[in-house]
Image 1: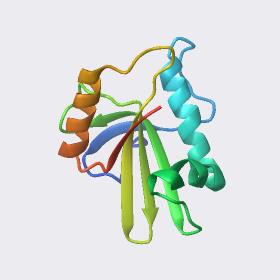
Image 2: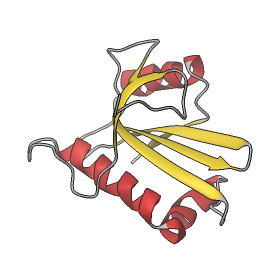
Image 3: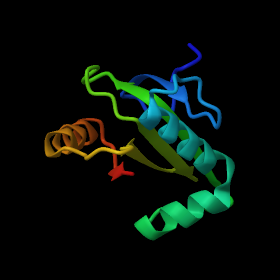
Image 4: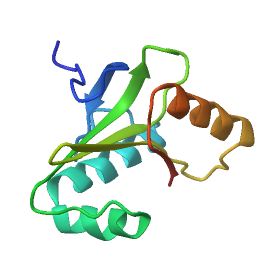
Length: 128
């Protein structure tokens, strides 16, 4: 399966982040997520600048993989905008990302994502 996210065992589907997303113009958050995450994957110094301050510096041995439209096995109804997986040696760190363009992040949505993160051993929730 082309969309299989082998780096995270509790994810059943997702799309690789793309610099030029194949999404409708109306999907502003999905497009923003894909472009931002693709840049994190492609430009290690950018990823280090963004992630270093939150405790995840990117070194020469780090691997950054990013996904959009992520579906978790535990709840296929809640779909965060992105998933970030960083491998450094044997260490793996991952985060759910939620993007808002021109809108407010609702408390109940944050609570759903926090539960999803806890259920799936995700280290962090990031709202952009």
